[in-house]
Length: 371
Image 1 (cartoon, rainbow, N blue to C red):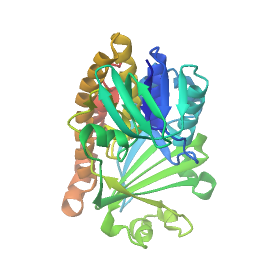
Image 2: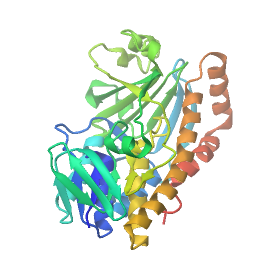
Image 3: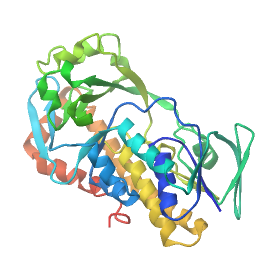
């Protein structure tokens, strides 16, 4: 019997590809987006291993930008606090490029069908799940992999609630053509600037032709003058205060994961399963690991029902540790005043080895799929 997947983003397409690679027929029940996703993704070694298991690593590497270091700097003074060499494969790729690779792959995979409608109702029973879509059609499947986001049907069905944005902090994002910025922004490095209650991440994508920026700050500071307030006194970043640059403001959902990832024949994946704080560059990486873990579970067991249990148990345990570490990292990054200055001193004194050890288990990924 077919496995259904809800969600037509990176998490949903990855889950569909994983199930098909495991020898299952798949129906994606979701409408394709009208526009390609914007922004960039940093993928650590765990993300690249997951792409390898899905069979699309080579295609992704061809469009990725290998990053050699993470530079951590003080946002106010511009001083470099530490420089972390990226010895294992760590690279950036545009969301649009990764999405296109996944979409092209599933389009040419005979086992995957696409029903362009969203699931609105479902009844799970011992032998499968019956679903009704918003076009009135019904779909019956052996299981549903719900990767339809924080506010989607799947999270509500499994946990009884959907995530709501918090009001304390927001993300400001933009892609800027590299030619509009000083050449240093095109260097193949990831850059983290820690300020007083705010932080900035930027790195090149699309072969260095575009630079992806993401700023996290308090909602109170995200006024019409936030660019000047944050960048105006920094000689390197002052160019970002240009009013011609139009940033996208996004409320950040409270981080976390439902206690239960599974209800009957429905399991969660991607943002529906775990809201990853944007502090360790693990949002897409963890969604890809969900898919790789799903593949491993489906190939390890001849029973779809049993495979869902393996997947939900393994991934919920692994993800909870990553979410916790990302939350702690975010609180440290958000420090201001004396605490922020002390943070900078400690990072400077501890050097790259401290950050390497802090990130090692996150980047190593789920040991159950890191073969």
